[in-house]
Amino acid sequence: MKNILEYIENSTSEYPDKIAFADNDHSITYTQLLKNAKSIGTALSQINKRNCPIAVYLDKSVQTPCAMFGITYSGNFYIIIDAEMPVERINKIFSTLSPVAIITDEAHLDNAKQLEAECEIFMYDTAVNTEIDEEVLSCIRNRQIDTDPLYALYTSGSTGMPKGAVLSHRNIIAYTQWFTDTFNINSETVFGNQTPFYFSMSVSDVYSTIKSGATLCIIPKACFSFPINLIKFLNEHKVNTIYWVPSAISIVANLKLFKYAKPEYLKKVLFAGEVMPTKQLNYWIQNLDEDILFANLYGPTETTDICTYYVVDRQFRDDEPLPIGRHCDNCDVMIVTDKNELAKPGEEGELYVRGSFVAYGYYGNDEKTKDAFVQNPLHSYYPEIVYKTGDLVKENDKGEIMYITRKDFQIKRMGYRVELGEIETAASSIENIEEVVCVFDKAKDKIILVYQGKKLTAEDILKCIKAKVPAYMVPDRIEKITLMP
Image (cartoon, rainbow, N blue to C red):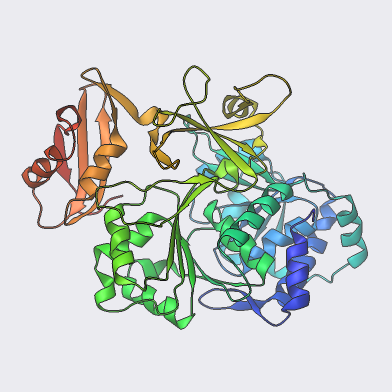
């Protein structure tokens, strides 16, 4: 296989009338998805460009994957733009991206015209009704190879300039093979999609769906503001697989929602994107069927989505961090010390990633690419580009990788190395704590803990933390807020 479009074509052949994607208002079958994508691909072919970026400027809906795959049929690669993003930030992205076209609709046309991009704007409704030209699409397809770019995803940059990681068909094919094999994704799978399509976690949902002939249901954002409706949505759509950020999973746990309703069809709960608070995970495990699979996935956008994973196979205390596990198939990881040597078990080091999941680099940004995508430091015998994650980790006595903190979040205090994440883990295990974040005021040499929770005072929290961490890690100041931003 060399092109992800084979996923759609194969699933359409096998499940022509099956629902591929559904949102709150509409659904499309695999046959409709294929037709829409080919129509959009035909419309875009008139710009006569190859392997160039095309922006998708739409609200999250069943239209979005049609546009994504339409761009693929045109021989180009897509970038999903957050429709709620300020025009100023989109223009920052476009300053390096220079898209050759934008796909949008009436709702976003005025904003699209304000963007600093000298390119043609295609209206979705017009493009999707274009007569399919199979001859043109065939000519484009014959020139495509598996190392062609498929999409770019933009992440925040430390300088304020967003960075666009470029991923290829080969990246997605290798990654999706691992994901579907590992978690037994098949035609019976119904995903409850939470993450935006401009976020790397959605890659797993979308491409596992079209590879397996599964169904993806887009959960309305409002459901997470009224979580009882979230459970209702999962049950109405018979969702059996979710892959959410931990903060979304924590909403359910913090409200003790399973006293009132439970997801009746759920079989797999996967999470990634941030540290999963063990206390909130334990609430799910203790209140749902024991045959449900729970897995902690780890990885940055630059490794397609994930590079290590851990299927929860034992009990953890509320104050005990979860492992991020072991490397995925066809993707290797290395823990490298400051001396560019492999770390010993229990020794801290930065996590490096190599293999088929690693992105090309950042679009139009050689400087940042060279900083993060480097020659394998363990040898110089042949060119081998690996990705530096910037995350500090170590291997535990079970051979599992434990996430510690961002390399730039580790601080020195009173001569000790302090991991702010360790303080957060200790604080998050305290009863009635809902959300917590720890920051360091470098100018004043102070550790500040900010929390969201009920029936707790700063004195209560301080007392509990002192029982869990050394004196040099105890926060100097504790602040309560009503809602974590």
